Length: 281
Image 1 (cartoon, one colour):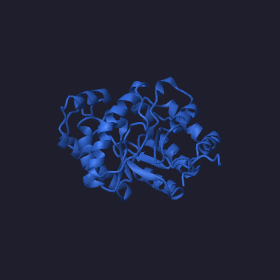
Image 2 (tube, helix red, strand yellow):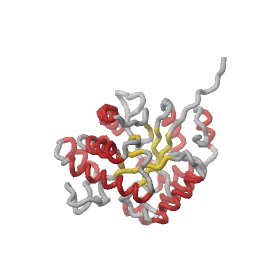
Image 3 (cartoon, one colour):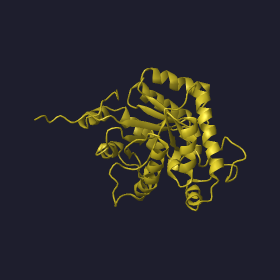
Image 4 (cartoon, helix red, strand yellow):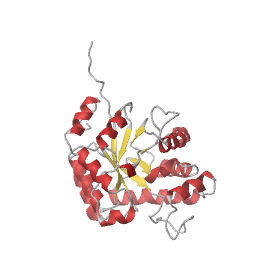
């Protein structure tokens, strides 16, 4: 009897390409090293010029299996691409908690939300010269009530070959961190609606954790991979801290700790232990 660990293919996706030059640089380096096989592009971010896109394309040449997707944005401190857009807060999208509350109360105009998602898909296509390989949402907005309907309709209409990210664990638990439990609950309806729309999605998800506690990322990665099914997705946020990032996002130093682990020798050793191809072939 063989004790070999079954081979699993996973997606290791770095979110937030386009949020800052330092994040872009870290993601490109990890793609070149084949430590990532997916990244999500924020077309509403400040670091999404021609040079940023050229750098991403150049990095992907060395990693032909790397998927490039759209990181659809619907929360502050970013601006919508479409006007008139509502609801807004000081000219920006609503903060995350307020958007979740408004969506739960069914107070969003899904046509307006859908038009914004369609505009972001079009912007991605114009920047990259092709449709996204997949589409997900910044801060998991794609699984929110009402938002998910507009999101899935926009992907179905404007990027029908793309798969979409669901944020539920492969084995939902009754107990666990509140954030993970909320994502499990919201993702249940998202998966059902995606299936009815004929859109593919990842069978499992991991990567959510409390960034404020600055936990050891190697320990976290082991927990992410444990039980993740073949085709599952791990979300990560590597990057280098710069002034642009500090102004836009509270997740700063932990990005550098994620980057350090992903470039370390410990990471490919962990992948081998779990039967995951080191180069994500």
